[in-house]
Amino acid sequence: MIQRTMKSKLLQLASKFPVVSVTGPRQSGKSTLIQDVFPEYEYLSFENPHTKELFEDDPERFLKTHSKHVLFDEAQRVPELFSYLQGVVDAADEPGMFILSGSQNFLLSKHISQSLAGRVGILKLLPLCYDELDEGGFRPSDALEWVYRGGYPRVFSSQIDPIDFYPAYLETYLERDIRAELGIGKVEDFARFMHLCALRSGELINVASLARDCGIAHATANNWLSALSASYIVHLLQPYATNQNKRLAKTPKLYFYDAGLACSLLGIESAEELVEHPQRGALFETAVISDIFKSRLNQGKTPHATFWRDSNKNEIDLVIEKGLMPVRAVEIKSSSTYRGKYFDVLNRVAPANLGLNQTSCAVIYAGEEEIQTARGSLISFRNAAKQI
Image 1: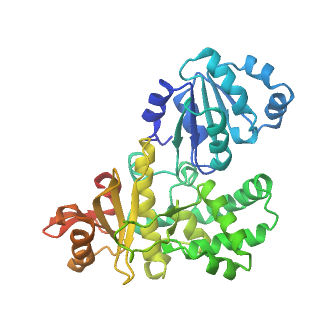
Image 2: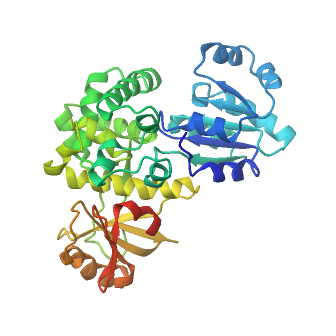
């Protein structure tokens, strides 16, 4: 079994909070993680109809029977659970009483904020990051293999070819999460919507264009984007903003959380296809940004990152912030060959607009060699999350 970096943070939070919540996309390894970390806890999944029925029939009796040291999986399927847990937790006031997991953040967050505020530690588990793959014995041969295979654990633990895994994953997601949980009836239209989003990964999001190309209303497109975001399929990277500069972009950029899933939606069937694919740069950028986010979330930290773009289309792919102040400017290049010009925009924009000198500039690329130049750091994709 591939060891997850989040394990230590999960143990730490369980020693402080009575409840810990682990959310993330379906099949990102949440159930495996919580059972590995807490083998002595009772495991109950509300995906099991019998367990769900027992709770709904008599919640108070159910929680008296399962009063502490319980793992509740797919907790979003019984939203009433959170209100009942509040009373149990307040009465006992012990750390590590319950571990909740679920694949749909839109339900968990709402009910946690209403019933368990201040009583719950919250973690988000995304698919495998590069370091987890490397340490688990699945080191990618090169950057394009890393992008193509993505990070969903079953691709590696069960040796499933991505061409087989991702279509099945998407069908399950559409049927179980989108149709059953969200009540979206037009599953075929939603599937097309996802394909159009994959074409736009790494781009400024134009909801009107997305809606028009999909043949749906603007409001529907916004709702579907929210559904994809809440179920950890996509995320929006916000633009860097200051009150002084009105020429900066105000529109966020759309990214998939997993480049392998985006590749599948684009019909890419091998890493070799990426070599000359028009989306290669965008997909590599998607993978790098996702890996940096995974690294932060695995530590229980919020990724504080934006991008910089002005009206002249000068752009910095990633601005890492700390305390709302920029600390690192990053350019992402899908080439495996280093060229000095990769630092041109960074060195022009970062000092003048972000107050950062060359030592705070970095280029992450698809090659192996790493060097410290007078213009900034050249970083291999293999170490992107470690050095940012």
